[in-house]
Image 1 (cartoon, rainbow, N blue to C red):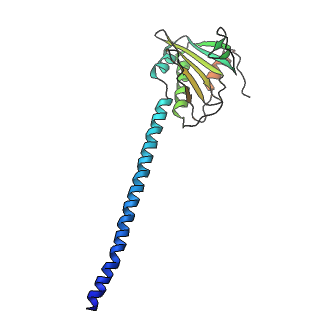
Image 2 (image 1 turned 120 degrees about the vertical axis):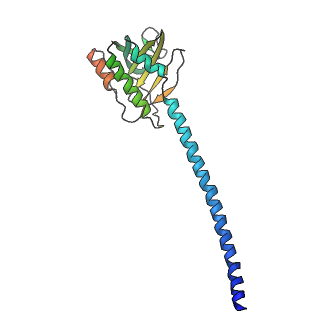
Length: 192
């Protein structure tokens, strides 16, 4: 009889432990699934932000195909009110040149595309653009106000609106933008 009592006593003691284990597993599963769902949601939001940071294909096609692409050197001091005859989206144009060489236009498009693709959700509080682009595709103007110092650009599509700020990843450099302007002997505003 003492064996039966021991068995019954031990099975009674085991049931609460098994119940606690099952309860603990359920809680862990519930909490874990919440973390997984949160991670998936965050990943999807990030993917959406990255897609929203990209420019439309037409913008790049305009840069690549416009043999009269205009590259501008801008004074980063915003003009209030901007004089329409000498300004570009509120910034004074220090000089400009036409980029007719297809290889140079391709390099400009590559720099912009790579800089936008490298963006990882960080924003600078400044916007001191020193470069502007105007490209025409099928009679429609695509305009860009670009700030490599702060890491981003504003794109103005043919409909005349502003698509907002598009961020660059770390390490975005003006490279070919500055080189083309310098070769054309266009003054460039110096970074502070």
